[in-house]
Amino acid sequence: MNDIPLRKIDHVRFFVGNARQSAFFYRNAFGFDVVAYAGLETKVRHEAGYVLKQGDITFVLTSPLSDQHPECYRLIKHGDGVMDIALEVPDVRAAFDEAVRRGAQPVRPPEALEDEYGVYETASILAYGDTTHSFVNRDRYRGVFAPGFKPIDPDRYNPSTARPVGLVAIDHMVANVEEGKMNEWVDWYAKVLGFTQLISFDDKDISTEYSALMSKVMQNGTGRIKFPINEPAKAKRRSQIEEYLTYYGGPGVQHIAMMTGDIIKTVRAMRANDVSFLRVPKTYYEALTDRVGTIQEDIRELAELGILVDRDDEGYMLQIFTKPVSDRPTLFFEIIQRRGSKSFGKGNFKALFEAIEREQALRGTL
Image 1 (cartoon, rainbow, N blue to C red):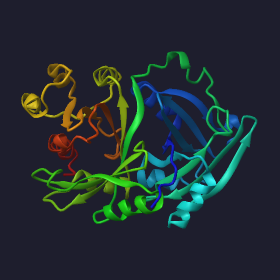
Image 2 (image 1 turned 180 degrees about the vertical axis):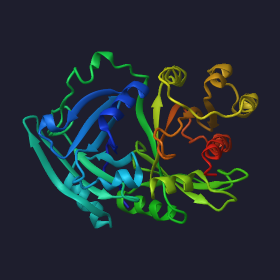
Image 3 (image 1 turned 135 degrees about the horizontal axis):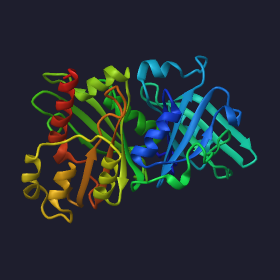
């Protein structure tokens, strides 16, 4: 089936308890610049929103301003998390109509929002859980983000004091779904959006003594948008996927992988900003050269920072994972640098899983 034309991930919208404080976190820990605001001062009465940018990554942080907000339930059910993955399309109505014709559940019909900067078009459909995909087009819009948003007041967040850490784009975004539901959502992305399967991992690839998961990676026709989909597999104990589903209250976005051109520089900057990363044992690095061969980076420096390496037929990649960024053990982030490799770090799965299980044991949720 033909894919619906998708240009890129336009933005990721988070629903959070306090958007102003979350903006402070992503700015000062992850190096994002806060560029726009919507709220009472911009005549938006029901919610506050902050737009953050770094490289080609755009995050939107949204909070309700009263208990009358239709999405308030999200905070009790999920805590802070991703509510919408917005996809830029050349034609919002055509994308929406075709997705619905193929079986997508509509959430918000196409509408053209207009202000003095032009016309911003949007519509949305339901994906896994209560996560949505918006279709957006701003070809006729010249404002800072969308109607209702104004450039940030320097008294609130001064652009001159932003300190980017070198993040340039979203590499992939991972969904966690219930056991037995992975193939259902793989089929949904294939049928509704025309995605194809890039790769799959089963419980033999991703397992430890205690837990396991299965995963399939779906991508759009250009390969610019990649969505791995995870489900738990039968195991002795509760896997990280089951822990996520319990504390998030259902399926949702597990992590966002963000690319950098210099992972050592990026991770040093983020560690200096007090970002917490998962650690693997030092023994991981003793066997690294035997496993991945010669690499450009100094292995002692990678070991110091906790950066993982994996190789495929096309090159190698470097990656590291943050700990969850909120009190619930749900959303976290991956920092990734690709040197030719198109893989997802299969050789690191066991070490990574064991690191996550050590964190689960501390939480008493393994």
